[in-house]
Amino acid sequence: MAADGKRVSTPAVTRVEDVDLGVLDDTLSFFIRALNLAVTRDLDARLEGMEVARGTGKITALFLIDRHPGIRPSVIAAAAMKDRSAMARILDDMERHGLIRREPDPEDGRVQALHLTEKGKKASQEVQAIVRQSRDFFHDISDEEYTQVIDLLRGLYWRIVKAHQAKGTKL
Image (cartoon, rainbow, N blue to C red; front, side):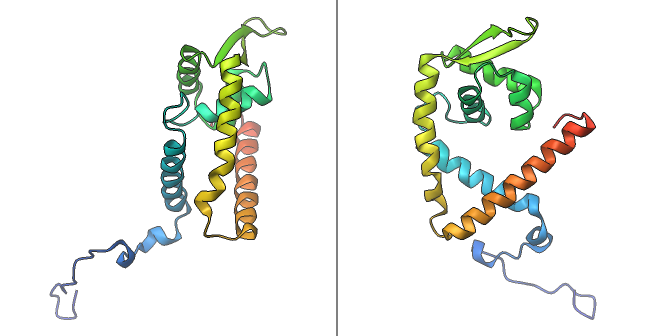
């Protein structure tokens, strides 16, 4: 508004480069969400046609089951920061696609132990090779900057996981 109380007309923004983010420019969650969307689109394009393409949590589950045969669904849910019902739907889908099998946990038959099938092991290896190429998405930042970002995000991730675990709250 002008000093005389009349609204000052500003030209419409027609290019994204001209957008003033305002409060968003200092909001970590805005940048995390925006980057997550961009990275997810890139990864989905690389995974086109694979059972683990589209959606979140399938790759995490695939990799954690591969690395920790017999892992419980609740542990994967906590690591992926998903609620148990959402993780159950992901695991059901993976089982339908023949990627995983569920067995009674040898220590507690009331809970499930998750294992990859041969198809799941093959998929895990293929997807890991694709995920390792994800560094290409950030080709315009130096290796040092990339390492700094990974280290920072890893530290934040583990602090959040441990804080929720200590409080006994769900992520």
